[in-house]
Image (spheres, helix red, strand yellow):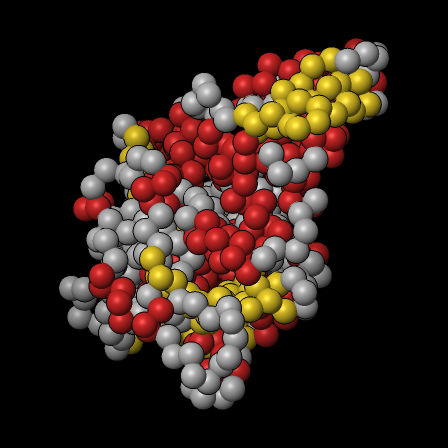
Length: 606
Ligand code: ADP
Ligand code: MG
């Protein structure tokens, strides 16, 4: 036994060896680069770290044949150029402590070594103060050539035939189209993260996108997503102790089925963390249904010691030293941005106190020509509208002529001005606004209006309650009855008059005043079901109230007859004054907006 163990030991000691750099680089390369997009990422990060103001990315065959990044940054002299392709060669940190305060994108000194180990790599570079430039050619980690050449300040790196010498890896590359999609997504991340920098993208030799530098984030988003896009965004500007959160969050009408339009940057570095995903979900609770994901463009400024970016070689996933407060800050930043008072211009004074004061609706019938259309419903309304960003109030190109008359501290609204054109399909309400038209689902809109009224009454002890002419009894399932029994206090605080009336049976003799037009039975049944589905433990009183209000408003609206014209008009006014006019409390859209600009495009007028 001892002999065997001894011989194994001997076998191991005599076989341990240090791997040649060529092999370790190949192994390490797998951690840093796995596809053309990750090559593009590393090269663009280096360009940014070098202070470039213009970065040109080009790919051929989705990057399988070529990924090329050219920048006008600081460049390198000959010695640095030769050193930078060695493993752990970096100019960005000198000691482990520096990682704590890292401000650059890179610091591991791995990327160029890794990339040049698994591709045909060439780099042309010239430093600020150098007389001439340097060209470096490396094939599969072996230096082939170094020569001098004339080159402007900056660096250009070409990476051809990625993984040509690692067939196992090359096999995992996907079709050119798929790889290209990853490259495009990455390009968007960089472009959004750095509006000050000019970017271009060429695909298979043709320019696919050119974004001028010195842009604002808003400009950049317009360039990437279309000129109308910012109308669906709300600015974020939030500070809490040493954390700052800025950027934009999307209204529910531009939400997605996946997270592809969530751009998050921590200290300018694209980053994700499960904590942030959770915080975003929470920020949109009661505004978006669980299967929808909002579009967000969030920039977090966090003191570097409080965030650990060294979790993974690709540096995308981060950890926070103080996760709780960080999460709360993100939730609060989003909530404030989505609530109109929170995102009012900074100079607009304190947020308006009562909801009633916000309704600055007044008819301006003189502005509408009624000659051509003989619709009884033609009316013009005048609403204030929230500017896109603090201080952007002047940018209102299509504003109604009377818009200037609106009070300066104008709160949010989906339109500055609108007129009701009528109803189509026996349901949808059509509105013209100052820059397009709106289709409104009156049921969803009504739910939203009622929901906010009910929720707004809650903090007042005297949540208004209205007695029913005929008290009604409701029998529910044993489970629902149990939930209902536990929630009686919450319900009473909300204005429901409910009491137990025998086995699993309850008596309703009052409803919250805003819902008093509905049937007590159907409202209570739906509330009981909602409570049962919500489950018991863990839910905060606020979350329960929200659930109850959602169910109650839905039940109340369901029972409504067709709305009269006057009711529709009132609904349009009420909806415009809600905090979140774009979705019903369950997250379904209330309005679909189409801009004249979009129409012009479709009709080929632009
Ligand atoms: P890291 O970025 O982590 O330092 P890299 O392998 O990506 O590691 O780059 C190594 C070094 O090469 C960098 O620290 C930098 O000094 C230099 N370098 C790389 N790319 C460029 C560039 N585009 N312009 C100027 N210097 C660069
Ligand atoms: Mg780097």
